[in-house]
Each structure stands twice: as structure tokens, then as C-alpha cells.
Amino acid sequence: MSEAFDCAKCSESLYGRKYIQTDSGPYCVPCYDNTFANTCAECQQLIGHDSRELFYEDRHFHEGCFRCCRCQRSLADEPFTCQDNELLCNDCYCSAFSSQCSACGETVMPGSRKLEYGGQTWHEQCFLCSGCEQPLGSRSFVPDKDAHYCVPCYENKFAPRCARCSKTLTQGGVTYRDQPWHRECLVCTGCQTPLAGQQFTSRDDDPYCVTCFGELFAPKCSSCKCPITGLGGGKYVSFEDRHWHHSCFSCARCSTSLVGQGFVPDGDQVLCQGCSQAAP
Image 1 (cartoon, one colour):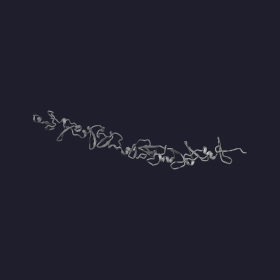
Image 2 (cartoon, one colour):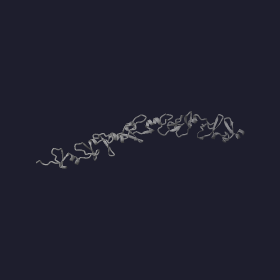
Image 3 (cartoon, one colour):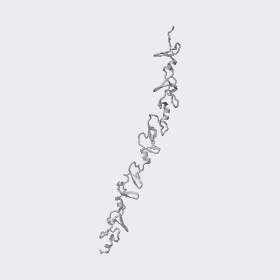
């Protein structure tokens, strides 16, 4: 009689049958699968000994069951991501969970270089200046509605320009005749002295310091011969073609102020009424 050669599980003879040898003895194929095979996490069927088995973390799959839960593409030889316990191919993951570039509309792939601003996302190479169309990268930029400008382009397009040199004012500046000026550009037309923060006036739209304006254009006081500019609230008196500072308009004999008083011209002089009636 031949020696018994039976399945370690069901005890049926294995003569003439396919079996699998284990450390605990031989098993017929059905018993081996029922005892040792893993259950597929997708179809819940046993993964037979002759099937290609794939696993991820603590889950096992038939090769045909290891696929993207959205597009059903096989993930056996593809990169994939697990999101909320679901397996996704890279394309589906990016479509569902990655941002889209606000410029080109393409997906911003995980791990790629990107820029984010105002709730929007761009590929690094797509975030361009709206003026020169050069990549902004890590450079400073200025947003304007839906556009973004590098600082030079923004200043060239939007910054006010000096009325004298026509260059942009990036900071500071002064206003003269409702126009912006660089502080260093607002100078006296006569002596080129800076006028910012100083009292000045103008002639034919050209600015002048008080000294130059007085020397060049102001009438001269008939008494002290100094210019009468009328600046700073300075008052003066005019009579015919002659002019006096208020402080200089006085009787040539007694020096009494004639401002608001009657007076009598006497050649190049003016006299109060009392002196004009007195003997010379």
C-alpha cells in the first residue's frame, strides 16, 4: 500500500491533484486559498494564489481591482495618491484637489513652483507683469484691479510726473499750480534757490523767490527805494505813478504816518496837511 498524501486542511488525497506545500504541510488549492489568501479590499473576493496581488498600507487588491476610484485607470504601474481612503491617479487628484493657474488655466501640479495672491494661484512662469510681460517671480509688484505690475512698469504707467522734468514721482514731491513737482525741481527761475517750504510767487507761470521777484518785477518804494512785493500781507499805498510801503508813507517833514490820512504832494515828497500849510 502507498503512503497517505492528504491535504492538511480537508484530508482529501492529493494524488494526481495540484497542491501547495507549506511549513504546516501540503494543501489543496481551494483549501490553501481559503486559509492563506487575502481578501481584495475592492471586490471583497479572495485573491487566489495564482493572481497578482497588490497592496497599499494594510489593504490588498487584485491587480485588476487596483485602480483609480474616479476614472478607473489601473494604478498597477502608475503613480497614485490616497485621498480620504480613496485611490486616485495623479490626473484625477490634480483635477479634484489642485489649484488651476489663473493665467493659463492648467493644473498647478503638487510640488511645482507656484505663486499665490488674493486667493488665486499661478505657475511661477505664468505670473507675469501686465506691462513688460516679464515673470515677476519674487520681485515686488503692485496690483491694479486684475492686473499686476512690476514697480518700474507701474511707476511708468500710473505714477504722477513732475511738471518740470517729466520724470515720475515715486515718493514725496510738492504741488504747484495743481501740478506735481519733485522738491528739487521747484526752484526759483531767477537764482535757482529751492522753493519747497519757502514763500514764493510767480510771474507768467514761472516761480520766483521773494528776493528775485522784488528785484526783477516789483515796484520800488518812493521812500526807501526797496521793492514792494505785497507778500506776507505787506500793504502799500499808490499815488499816481509812485508807491510806498505802509511803514514808509509818512510826512517828509514831521514823519507822521499818512496812511488813511489826507496828504498834499509837494514835488517828490508828500506832506501832511499841517506841514503843507506851515511856512517852509
